[in-house]
Length: 333
Image 1 (cartoon, rainbow, N blue to C red):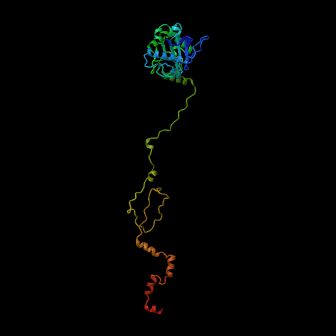
Image 2: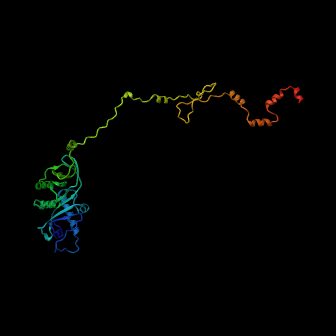
């Protein structure tokens, strides 16, 4: 891929490594550049054009590699340039390889979920006119040495058929482990990672540990014997007596008959409402004659005596007694 600016001067090395800052690499001594040239803007242009070319080759609806994506993610981009191309003395770009670490949930060969953070192949592109010339292997091998990883330790994001054939041809990566996401991993991916043992292996390990460990198990607690159904009673006799409450008829039928003499031991009266299970009978009705007789037998109040004493005519009883005397006696006085 050719650009209107000098690529050979911008990228002094054959393979240039760019991070999220997209800073231009250190220039070789003795190299000069025109004044007022924004080198970072030129690097951003290279990244955007490479991303568009890769998306077109993979038939993607939008590029997955761009300068803005590089600046917002911790990805690393390896750019390979053609040193032999001297088109007007500006150089050309052969291709690129973008990698980055991602946290993934992948399935192993036993279909168990594993949380890992491997190095992932995110985008890989070699210009169509320069494919099958060893440029892809050169770029891929440089990345493996730089990142210090093995091919089977990588996770590939939505690889194309060309990339799968490339990995099979150069690194013997053929058998894949099925996943539910877009990433592809190969057999041997979990060889360097710690995985929990399977259920059968875990049970075997526990049984072996129990056979080796001389410590006896804790004695089981003895539960009390279960009572028979016939021994269980819902209520006792005293409880059932307490539940008996006398039913009182409505008024005026609840009036008790008149008794000649009061009972020797009247029923105790409850100190508060609701404490006694039975209610005592109501007070008997006092007739009018008995009430009048009780009033006559009551001694007069001291105030009434004073009024009778101060009355000149005296009481009606005295008048009746004086009028009953013979007239002969009255005339004597």
